[in-house]
Every structure is written in C-alpha cells, then in structure tokens.
Length: 116
Image (cartoon, rainbow, N blue to C red; front, side):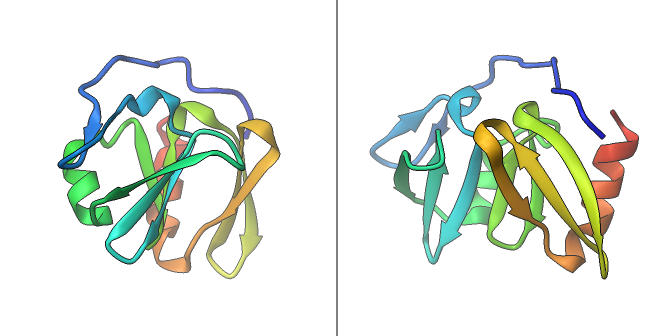
C-alpha cells in the first residue's frame, strides 16, 4: 500500500496543562511513562505530560492510528504498510521513518488499510 492521506483537516490542538501543539505537525507519538514524545521529525520532538489514553481522547480517530501500546501515528503521513508476519506490520512514514506495530493492534491496522 502506498500513497499519502490527502484529507488533512484542521482540528483543535493537542494540549497538556502548559503546552499546545498543532496535530498536523506531528508525525507520530511515542509514550514514555506518563510523558509523550511528539515527533515532528526523526530527531526533533516535544515532550508533554499526558498519558496515551488522555491524548487519544483529544484526537480524531481518523487522524491518528494506534499501532502499538506506546505508538500513535498521524495517518496523513503514512506512506506504506507492510505485513511482516506474526500479526505484525511495519509502517513507513515521512522522512524514511519505519515503525513496527504490536500484534494486538492488527485489527486497527487492517481496518485502516481497508478504509483507504
């Protein structure tokens, strides 16, 4: 599967108690305990104090896809999805970033693929 989601829409920003981020700039989110790293590039990220579940409540599910218990991906930047076996996938996103899914998120990814 290839191609980029062209349905980029403006939504309310991602917020914690002190910061505000435009979700359209975020490639993916990786959790680190009660903190989240919001990646704008492979080496540039901002850290906020939120849990993954709190962030998911703020987001539109069509804009971000949960692929692992600690990873959310902005669907706008997904360039390809490759099945790697054992109910796992590898997603390629902008700037050559490869992210591996968790087995328990197979249905989320298959649903995303079928909706494109």
